[in-house]
Each structure stands twice: as structure tokens, then as C-alpha cells.
Amino acid sequence: MRLIILIIAGLFGAIAVVAEPVEKSNVVPDAPGGGLQIVGDKLYIAAWGHGFHVLDISNPTHLKWIGGWNNHTSPTGVYVVGDYAYLANRTSGFDVMDVRNPANPLRVGHLFTGGDAQSVYVAGQLAYVADLRRGLDVIDIKNPSKPELVGDGDTKGQAFHVQVSKGFAYVSYGGEGLRVFDLTETSKPKPVGKCRTGSGGSFQLLGDMVYFSGADGLCRIDINTPELPEVRDTYRIGYILGGIYVSGRYAYVPLEGDGLHILDISDPTRSLSIGFLKTGYNGWDVRVVGSYAYLMDRGANLHVIDISNPANPIEVSRFGTYNFCSRVLSLTNFVASKSALEIQAGVAGAITDAPPQLADVMRIADGAFSFTLRGVPEGVYYIQASTDLISWTNISTNTLSAGGTLRISDADAHLFNNRFYRATKKQ
Image 1 (spheres, rainbow, N blue to C red):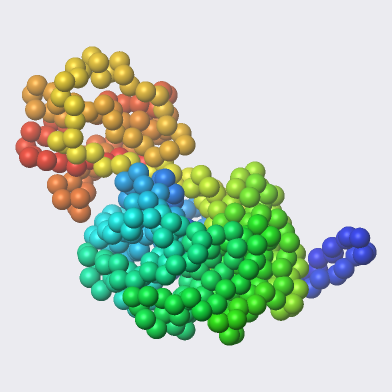
Image 2 (image 1 turned 60 degrees about the horizontal axis):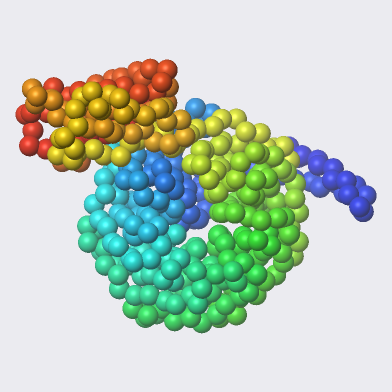
């Protein structure tokens, strides 16, 4: 095995650290619930205000957008099991997506939680949601089309992240730390333990250890006895804004406005920084498979980082997930009083940092339906139509002007009682 020798110079002189290269494996440790999840060669993304997206990552340096769903809400947590993706969708609540056809994710179930759903974890026929306003929600998902709230636990503070193991739920809460719930009684999870870390952030649970992020950096919490979680060590690296990822002997830690740190955690009592990639963006979540880390920033851009040499991580590609799928437009949802002249005069400019938009709709005298497509200047977009929100057909391919807008007309609209439209960007 090839070894990498890294020399770290500091106040106490130079220290030689021997670090093994990242193992090239397609086995991904279980760490769903945050903004990213990898299943096989697909990456599922809860992209904040930019919707839910599926990417093909079979070629890490040339990512491909497969499909997405965008209803202008703010999904921040995703958990994929079998045919379904479960979304924590902020104030919209909890969504169930059918992803059997990843080119067309379809929402089949929804539950308004009445709070602010941040993170989701699925175990068996139950979904556990960290709800910022409510605490821990327990949702029955036996029938994906009709998720039902069946229990809740009071976290005594804002709940950010949740994972479940061996009959216990672990929830980060408020500005304090980690809370543990006994799940014996589904309807009323019982708080049995807590651990103060000084902040409440994201975490990853592996075995009997929780790797916990927050304002103080990365700390390790021993949960061998769930009722008595105990901080073993803290690496004060700076403010960790979102998710972290642990694989093998390494922890991958994105920092706000700083970059991606790689820590060697093989010593159970002391973490050691061995690699760093300076970035100009705020890292939000990260996942690792093989020799690549997939880092999402707060703008829903995805950055692919080669970590084959953990001492020298290198960004090799970037993909903006935010501009691929517009919100669905309905044929019957328009303002008929506007004239064509008013519509054209009211067209706004290009969109370069958000999903494409379909706007300024109107019916034309001959029964055609017209609207404005706004997107990236000179970008190529498909206009797709559906009658059931399940099957979508490309009805036109359009190249936008340098101004980023184009007027679209559907001459066949008069043949339908209702028809739905969306725009997707060609890669």
C-alpha cells in the first residue's frame, strides 16, 4: 500500500504523520438524513429553495442531471429507501417521493407537520423528523401516500438533526447539544439522556460513537450507554455550518466560508487535521464514495473533490443543481385580462442563480396557451407537458436569447381541459 507522508509545522516543531490513502470502495456508511444521499451511482439532493434533484455520478468529473421536482419549497433533508425518497421540507412539512423513475420524481404523499422539518431518518415503517419548532416527530409511512403523525418527543429546544439506532433516537437540539430518546413507545418517545456540547448541529452516528458538529467544531460523543452520552474529545476547528461525513479513519468537515477539512480520527482520544481545501463558499453538506467527496454549498451548487490524496484534496468539477427544473405551471392557472402587448412589455430579465421560471401566462384567441420562459442566457431548455403530473413529454426545445427570456406558445392547448408545463435545462 502506498503511504503519504505529511509534514505539519507548528509551535511544537514538525510532526510527521503517516496517512493511508482513501480506500476505493463503493460501500457507503449509513449517514442519510441530511441534504445529500448516495445510492449506487445516483446522488439525491435536498437543495433548499431549489427543489429535490437526482444526479448521475457514475463519472464524478462529468455529473449529469437525471431529474427533479421543484415546488418552490425548501427541502433540507432526504432519506432514500427502495422506491421512495422521504423529504424534510421545512415549513411545508414531510414529503414522500416515488423515485422509481428518477427522471421524473413524483410526490405521492405529504404531511403538514405544523413546524419546520429539518432532517429525516427512516427505520422500518416509521420516519423520524427533526422539526425545528416541534421537536422529534414520528411518522407512520406504511402507506406512502398517506403518511400519518403518530408520535412526538419534546427536545426542549430547536431540533436540527436526527438519526436512529438500536431503539434510540439521537437528536441535536437548540444551542446545547445532543438529546437521546427511548423509542419503546412510538407515540411518546421518552427522553432518557442528553449531552451538552455548547451548540446543536448535524452529526453522524457510527457504532457507539456520535461525530457531532457545531459552533465548537467536531466532537466525539460516546453513546455506549445511551442514557449517559459523554463527550470524549473536541477538535476546535471553527464553526461547522452543516453536515459532516465519516468514512474509515477520516472525517470530512465543511466549514462556513472556509473550506473542507479532512481529519484523521483513528486515535479515539485525539483528532488530527491532515488535509484542507480552501473554498470561497459556505459548505452545507458532504458525502464521500470511493476517491471523491461531494460537497454541497448553501447555494445548492455541488462541488466534486478528489480526495485520493487526503493531504491534498483538489476540486475537479462543479455542478449547479439549482437551474435545472422549473415549478410546474397549470394551463388553467393564468390571468386572462392581460394583453399580449402587456405580457411582452412586462418580461423580466435572465435568471442565473435560480431555477428557470414559467411566467406571464395568457390564452391566445385561437386557443393556444402562451407563457414566458426565463433562464440562463443562451441556455437550452426543454418545455415538457403532462396531463397527470406523472408522464412528461418534450413539446419543444428552446435556446434562450442573450437576455435570457423567450416567449413560448403551445398551439395544442385547446385540445386539453387542463395541461401542466415545466421547463428543464439541457446539459
